[in-house]
Every structure is written in structure tokens, then in C-alpha cells.
Image (cartoon, rainbow, N blue to C red; front, side, top):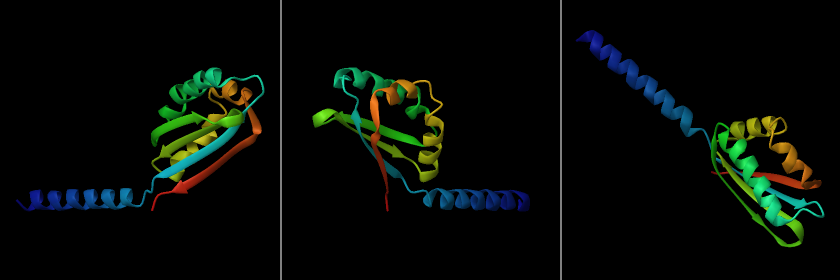
Length: 121
């Protein structure tokens, strides 16, 4: 009986530590704006954007959701929700080596790309 009580207490302590650790993780909203290169249509870029989402971004640890939309003057908006800053950072580091990233980067004016992150309270 004493052993069972000790094991239960140990298990509850471990669960408590796990809960505290996850409570410190604050979700991140990543906002990216960019401009397509001349000659790249929104229709074509939509396919390329979907490829980068399916083949890379959505497979990254901590990925929660992603959406994108075309704006005026070849502008584009991408919003990605991450579990944490650490997850968002890791995704950015692996982005350049993703096979779908080359097509994506070849289609945009890299100088126009701006990323801002917002952390949920």
C-alpha cells in the first residue's frame, strides 16, 4: 500500500510539473507581408503558396494553422499560428532547406518581405 501511495504521489508530481511547463508556452501569431515579382500571377502563386504549406510549414513541430490572401498591387499576406516562439524560430531555420521554398522565394520580391510576430498574452 505504501509503495502504491508513493508511486501515485510521484505520478501526480510529474503531471503537475508537466502542466506548469506547458502553461509557460505562449502561442505566437506570425504575420508576413510580401510582394510578388512582376509576371507572377496571384493564381499561380496561390498554388506555390499551398505547396510550401503542405510540404513544409504544416509539418513543422508546433504548427497550429496557416492562412494566406492576395491583396492589391501583387501584395500577399500570410498568417501562421505557432505553439511557441521556439517552434516559429525552428521553422524559419529549416525553411531555406525545404524543397518547396525555392519556388516560393523565386516568385516574390525578397526585399518586400516583412515578418512580424505577436505573442498571445
